[in-house]
Image 1 (tube, helix red, strand yellow):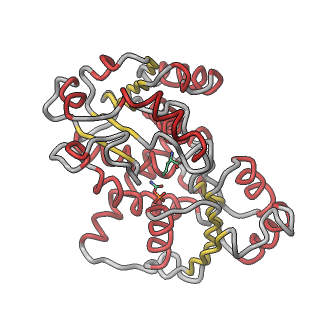
Image 2 (cartoon, rainbow, N blue to C red; image 1 turned 90 degrees about the vertical axis):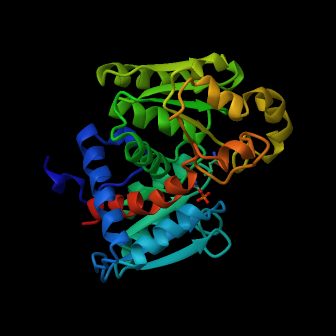
Image 3 (cartoon, protein in one colour; image 1 turned 180 degrees about the vertical axis):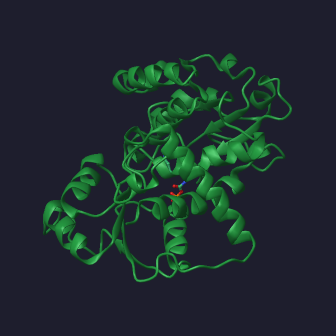
Length: 313
Ligand code: CP
Ligand code: NVA
């Protein structure tokens, strides 16, 4: 694969990337994890600067970008929505042009996916999606890495997402699993099914990669799964829907009884975090022996560093 083709690219969703490219970035992340564990420090972002734009809160994503960039000699600059003009006193287009003149790359976490797309078009530098209402691509790269660390491979394994099937994490898992040949099941009430357009696209991609995409309200769908995954019932920005979601999703809590319905003692539990223990996941599962959530959180850093190393010119 010609890795120079990755240089200068943004990461808005994995739809824009090929299987080989994702494979290359994942392999890089594994090397970076080994280096970090071995205490190896390099200066691969020396002289570069990264703008970190946040309209929503973050622990993992911010810390992953900031430490990954800083420890390689780069200069990350955190800019919350309270600090800058983005879309308030200045258009997103104009802000993008200015940031593009000063920074080598931009990370954006926020509400509208179109804001991210506008930043990518007008800044002229790589733009990384740190989460929008629509997608959370850096998260699901870490999820795939965690599955591979556990099972040696993700291809041919079955990941089952239980919860809000239309949220940014479920949609992003749908895309990356389809690209990488991972069987993916979404178990969700029909009212929370992902949109038909993306579902059709991913069904087609999955078939071509030799994998199956299933969407069902039936909890029996966890049978045989290698990994169960869940996320909060109401995502950031959806606070007004909390009660409505809880009513719909209460039967879909991932508890030990549901883990046991996989029929697999070696099945693992994943969650992007932050979690609301006692809602989407029982404490016995997230704090139990099948949970891999802390590896998954750490892997955010290695995968994000790999994305930046691959794409920064
Ligand atoms: N998983 C994740 O994106 O966590 P933060 O919201 O803390 O960044
Ligand atoms: N779906 C969640 C993910 C948080 C990392 C949210 O958007 O709030």
